[in-house]
Amino acid sequence: MTTKSDAMKAVEILLEYIEGKENVSREGLMRTPERVVDSWNEIFAGYSMDSKEILEATFNAEGYDGIVLLRNIEFTSTCEHHLQPFRGRAHIAYIPVDRIAGISKLARILELHARRLQNQERITKHIADDIERELEPLGTAVIIEASHGCMQCRGVAKQQAIMTTSAMRGVFFERQEARAELMQLIQQPVL
Image 1: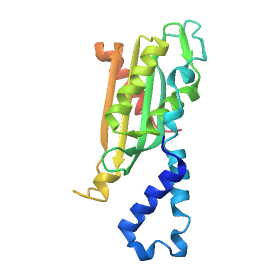
Image 2: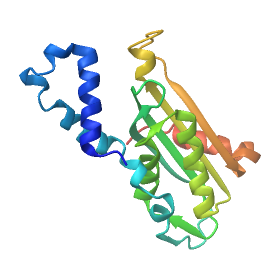
Image 3: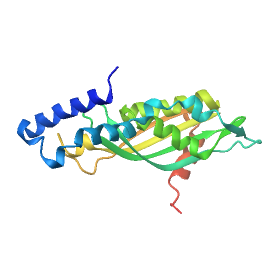
Image 4: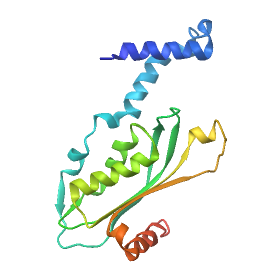
């Protein structure tokens, strides 16, 4: 198993590659390997989270059968291809049958998946999979909009590009009216 010390040594090697061996001992870089590893423990905390645990505490829906939508949930993740950040907002919705999740649980499911090495498509799919599996709703919808550091600071260098992904399940996939109502709710003005 790789230890914190091993990870810090790997960061030192990367710093030598970037700065040159003689520059990594300067004051500004002396504790950088430790700071980087500590920050990675926070940035990649999703590997120690469990979606079943997050969504196990539910409440009786008490007959509510409308759309439950948490919109504009901000997030930051890390692209697994270039180790560059990507950030944006997610809209997570479902139509309950018997159980509803606490509002913070939807944001926590997003955090679980965003705090891993990722691609946007996988985050979108996995959030929908978790909600489907744990809540068994009539429908689930996840829409994510994000700007990607790998496109902004390298390659094509497009600063304003926004990538949008979606996963529509159940009635949100099958019924245009449900999708239209969802989109109308997402586009409502912010309070």
